[in-house]
Length: 133
Length: 136
Image 1 (tube, helix red, strand yellow):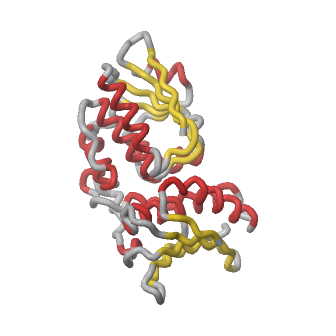
Image 2 (cartoon, chains in turn red, brown):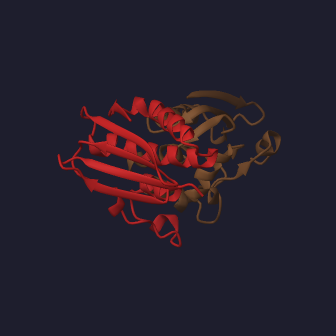
């Protein structure tokens, strides 16, 4: 588990932490890459849209749950559930897709489950689950 | 991230930017700024060498689209609007892939991100430098 200041300059370190942690749990290269992208998108959105440039902290936990690789991202920014952002209809031309949501779209593309809950102290917990196979 | 710029002398309008390292939310505006400087100097076509780009996030995708808009003489949308920033290029290239910006040799991880977002519909992706340059 790691705690980092909610600053964009920490994204590289966060990706390194996820890479090392997931590798140490036995993940292959493709799975590692997918989780790194999903975590990067999630953390960047928390920094930019959650904390909005204000000081804050983000906690990242990497674990294995059975055969699943799980990353939990926790913050104290105002509650926001990114899973409620509707997925784009990819049958539509680009110009007709809804605004926003590119980061959460990529997150959904790269992991199997994205879950959000408001924590007891009013913060956010985003859980990203990637199946091993 | 490091950006290396090479102006292609044959045309005077074509330049290549090599993006080395990770292109993410913390630095994507550097790429847009360099493209803007080059456009101000008369560059209208751009080959983006992604062979040494080790990571590409959605911000990197928006940056690539912003470069395409700049080369077309348009102003990029607010990059925080995500898909909205990409709409403009989609509009500009309704008849197929736009021809002002092309991509060279993205690594598998980066190429996968481009495909997942559907951007390969709007950018030619080349694997050979000479072929890429002669395609302009």
